[in-house]
Length: 357
Image 1 (tube, one colour):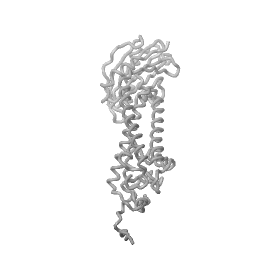
Image 2 (cartoon, rainbow, N blue to C red; image 1 turned 60 degrees about the vertical axis):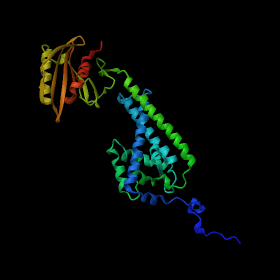
Image 3 (cartoon, rainbow, N blue to C red; image 1 turned 180 degrees about the vertical axis):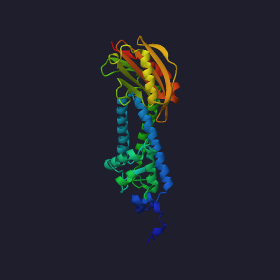
Image 4 (tube, rainbow, N blue to C red; image 1 turned 90 degrees about the vertical axis):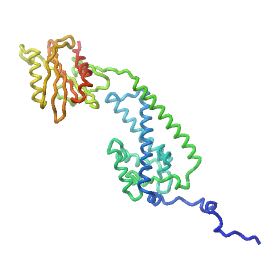
């Protein structure tokens, strides 16, 4: 009779039971990870995802998407939000991975160790907008939650009952699926980088355009580069208000009908009145010498001024134009520290003032 070897002599890795061992409880598995290690692994995946998404969104610009104007900027950021949400919701929901997670060999799973599904992924992604937003607290809430929570979960994980674990600790990962995802993610990453390169080249090669802005009654106009836009918050009585708040440059036009003034009122009188108003409205104001100029084939006076508003140092170019029926005040300003670099542009915008014939 042939003697069977003791079961203890059979290597564990060849045991059918060992091969079929179910995955560990995901909460306990996540809890077993070193806090710092899982934090930096998740952070690295998060950074890589954002770099690739930034490359992709930059590439969109090469297809004619412009964020120069307020309206187009709004559409662009809505599109960007949709892309960001779809990226996380679809990829994590269906596979558990993002490109960053796949690269760092971690995966988002539900309590059973499977991809969380679209609903749980949607919850995670929705909360991600607040806790992992680089523009809102820099992702600090997510980092604190991962370090402080018992099972290394960020707030989105806690809300969706999901976990982020190391791929090597799961027993149900398909090698075929891993290979397919590796190929697909590599292609997406390369295309994103190529898109970024074309986007940067396109942005750098664009010829600046100009836009004309009109008063409500369409009687006067002013022209500015396309990165300017209407800004209704500058002055309650302004006829034209435009700005680029990102670059801190502003221009408004105020018109005064001659019918409301004494017939002997001159452009010089108007200039003195504007200077006096500036002295009252701005602290520590200093006014440069007036110069005579021509705007829209009309006599004009221009001067520069500097002062402080709410502790911020501001520099102005004030241009006063007399037409047969009106006096027009064109006020352009920016922060004093930006004035020299923006002076030529502010002068050009001011000089573009025209009456609509």
